[in-house]
Amino acid sequence: MNKSGGAPRGRRRGSPDTREAILGVARRRFLADGYGPVTLRSIAAEAGVDAALISYFFGSKKGLFGAVLGLAVNPPEVLAGALPGDPATLPERVLRAMLTAWDDPERAAPLLFMVRAAVQEPELARLVRGILEQEMITRIAEHVGGPGAGARAGAFGAQLAGVIFARYILAVEPVASMPADELIEHLAPGLRAVLYRRAPRPHVR
Image 1 (cartoon, helix red, strand yellow):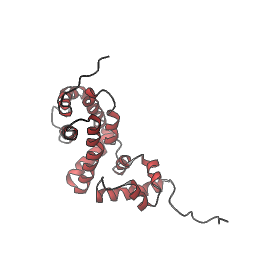
Image 2 (cartoon, one colour):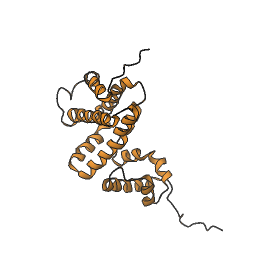
Image 3 (tube, helix red, strand yellow):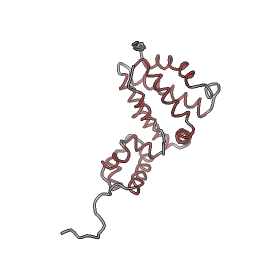
Image 4 (cartoon, one colour):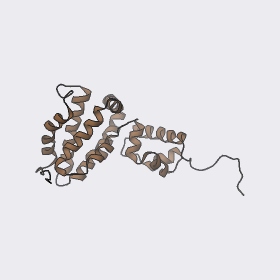
């Protein structure tokens, strides 16, 4: 017979304390080892929980990354929402999603902190680089496909990073105060040329 009144053994169940324990382990592991080598299974083992519990709390590895850095807006998830649709208008969708997130002062504050801190902290820079390469540039390359997709996606990502630094970090005018629609109008053609060897035409209904 099972004895009552004793503390339960085995892996921890879901609770606020368990969630914080997972975040603590993940934060230390991400900063120490980078994004790529760390697995949800290894974090679960160290935190003493089932890997399914991490998925329950955070959805995925990139969701856990966003929670570790306290991001109200998780860049990989913003990108994932912008990918589906007409290939010809992918630059417009990605730009609009990015600008919508970063133009919101409250939601963008943790993003600004992340970027500024990454410039000064090598461990955080490695973590951010890993998430950009694996969860964003690789996803864009897989989405557009074709010869040289990785290089084209990398150049596309580099230009987006330049927009973020010019508009939000350095506040370079007139880019910093330009309305989003106008900025998209100026930037989308160049991004389209980078992303596609032969730019597709938007579908006409």
